[in-house]
Image (cartoon, rainbow, N blue to C red; front, side, top):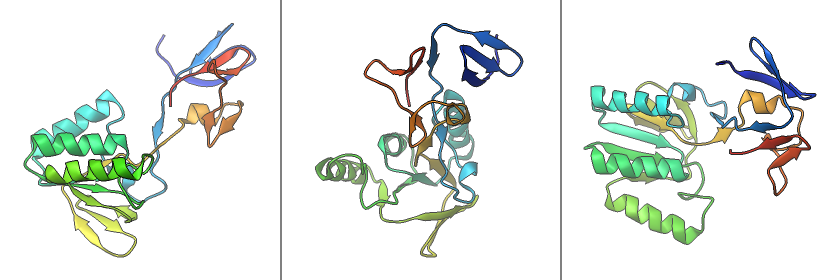
Length: 192
């Protein structure tokens, strides 16, 4: 059976063309890219799935971009920047809205990672807000424009529509679970 689940409740998973009764359900739906309503952001490359990563790699192999912008400096953005800097002869930029790379980590960690990226030739822009992504540039809220040949979005995730529509307790859209990953008596949730 190859179809998407649409809803879950009363011991039934309703799918696109069928429904399945269950005793125990495990939700492992992953996440969706969060573009925060920024115009043009959905046209950027993402690397959250194998298919998206292959698409980005093919673009790099076919077009040999000279200026690559990575929007978001969490673990994914930092890793992508590091790999690209080691494997391509391109100007690579990491763009972060907050005041430092890896804002979820300590300042010391952020500083060490920024220094490591700088040694690899990665340009880091912090405290800048992307207002629009165009095919050939990134526009910032202060009016500055930065030309680019490729933009990769790593700035955030949100729950997929399936999870958002579930009638389960949530925190910022994510399913709340106990220490055993149980969301309710007969539903478990894993991942993010």
